[in-house]
Length: 200
Image: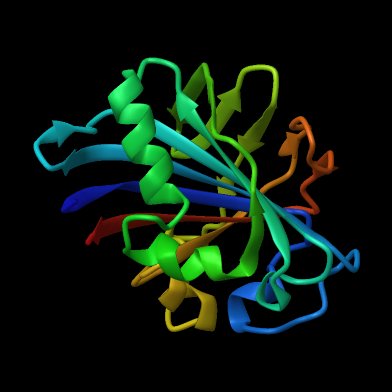
């Protein structure tokens, strides 16, 4: 199945600013790592099936750092998605249909069944916030210099796995998740904002 989708990418994890796992194998701040990745799809199709306007939230849990693998993962899909859209988005975001998530799935030992949820995405004054009803919330405050320019990173090792060209650093304070069968956690303050353009 051929697919493509582009949109906004947001991430926060249990580490302090800045998550060392983006740079490759590292020691997580707490000895373990939990993270949330939000994919707000602006445009997307899969064999003619429209995926535009939908949101997927990935939650991951690792006993050590991201690169060490052996993680547990689950995706939450916008409740407005049809059954067919849910099926396709789960397949894409668990790596079954190729693309960046096929690489990322190499660090996931167990995929829990996808769930649907009400997902609310807001961009108040360029500060994104995402709520997954009954599961958690993500809040990001991009870092800016005195002229208002963002703090941008390029070329970090794990960015290649997600096929991200650049990402902007952000504070993730207030981010917290507690999903069934997964570790409950709060962000140590880490976060990034980027855009994605994926296909397979």
